[in-house]
Length: 387
Image (cartoon, rainbow, N blue to C red):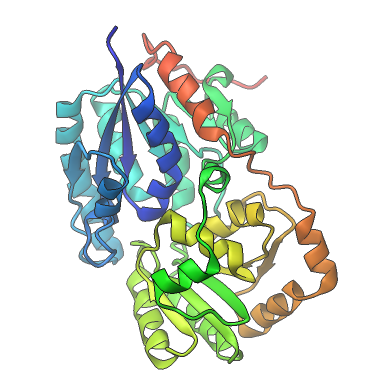
């Protein structure tokens, strides 16, 4: 029996962390052949050359496509998409997968989806139907949905949105979020192990901070992140671990500001271009809160029963657990949110929340469909009309 060739695409560290449990299961399944297509910030020295972590995890990388992420201006991102589209076309033509797996809503994912669509390769899209009103990702995500043939959503409301976009309900599977698989399966590091590995001495209270650009706002990154840094200046006795921003337009501005802040506050702050999933989730387990505007604060943090202070509009539109505090990107509001996480009433609420994004068994649900779904004639889609 011929093994089904399942090509998994990854272009960022965060995306790879989510895809890791699925890629691992595909690799171990005797009915499947895993192909890995790696691009984006994985191949950038500035963003930590995280393709090395993929290889360290025991995966072979079948193709690498350099998108030349030398700048994060909108015109440079356009050029990167063009380079990626050309490179992905060549890579996929050689790999000839039976199906391509794409996660999320980034421009790297859109470029590889366009290439697969033109090459008539079926696409399985993970995390469709979600909403992030402050980002270009909103339009990209829904565009990938229309190019895809199988859909794996994380909550039932997102499944309804994919169907609303005209996708056949028989091809839309509500499976939960892959991020929770890592929480369920990983043996996390202790506080002492983290201090050794990170070369950082934790305080009595600690924050994990990740802040990305809001790509539908012009030049807002510096102003918004300045407000957060001014807020953190209010605390001398709190340890702060920063993870750097992604390769979106404006990301380098944030990263330069982090570097300068850590340089001037080395007694309480540290920064890492990429922590990897094990250290990142181990940190989540011990910090008082996740602060910033990353999706991990919305999806994974509730699994650890810790609060998230979600700043600004980057994640506006996502379904959120009650452990998440939304606030404006101004010092007064951020300070108020930090005060709230230390109240007895809020802490009691956090300990009793239910994470709406699933139970940590998402990868096996996705693989069951990927390896068994009949791909014959799958390319010819009809628009599903809701009565």
